[in-house]
Image 1 (cartoon, rainbow, N blue to C red):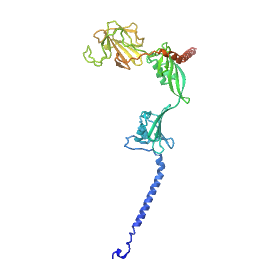
Image 2: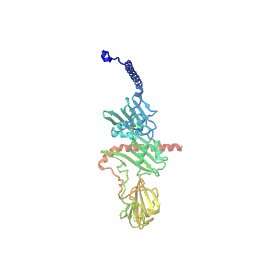
Image 3: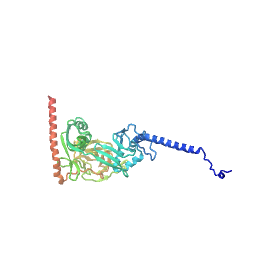
Image 4: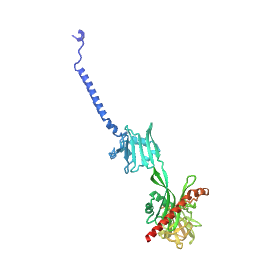
Length: 445
């Protein structure tokens, strides 16, 4: 008989309810265990740096810097190592390429992160595992701050307010300008600026001699009373081989800055374009010229001026005789060093001016020699070269440095701005002479 016929229901399977109940209990137990494990690991995960990996990272020695200093719960600090890039520094702090790119998209000011220097310190805040703030001390005065905002990151440069204090130093040359100025208390920056001021008049590798003196008035930049760096030189005096040279820095009402002598004439020297009073160009500057004697393509690194033998040759700018003598194809040649990397060469000369010697100072327009045909020359002419930092350039087209005199309209303003510095130079030089005389008297006793 079928069960339906009796009106009774078939009993259910006795195992199914037990399995269902046991399964639910097991699932609950697993969830409870996993939840407990997850809760137990929360402190560890909160303290671990977040690493984003939207795409594979390059193979770098260490993903996380083991020496990374944790400043507090929110900030990490990383000191830049030699050769380390911003990407590598961020990787060492636990941030991935996605974060790096987002920071670089913060604006132009964030580009300073691409020029990290060893010893600089990156500070990062990521309390929730995501970078919220990044700081970089670019120098003692400038700080870069990157902050997270609603649509990415923004970057700003902040400059600490500084004060300017006027200082004075003086010294006597014993060996080199660098050693003597450093002993006097001038920084490398100040020494370089001093050399640039007088570079047109003094060859600091050859012209100096023991006993030469210098005096400098300059600004010192301070932060909270502590020196940060040397500022600009305001006025300076240099006594070289008994010749007194002075220079002052002047800022005109329009903000332009230049260095002048106390009378307003420029410290910068000018050049004339041609070394002969009457010119006739026979051969121009040409790197592919066919040589008239050897019939081969040889660069012609100067300009040839045709002139009769004995025509006076004038130096085109103030300078010092660096060479005067015979030199291969140039024949009789004179080389003038004008300072600041400028040199001129005068070749094929018939003879030199009387008394001309190496090391001699010559003024623009002075006759230094006479046209001839010595060396590799087919006839009398002057071969003239112009060199800038060792590179020969076309004398006819090169942009010549020009001495710009002080505009008459600014003269009163110039004297007002610089008069005090000249008075201070007088007093500083007088004290220096007195100290030297006292030292000489004491040593004689």
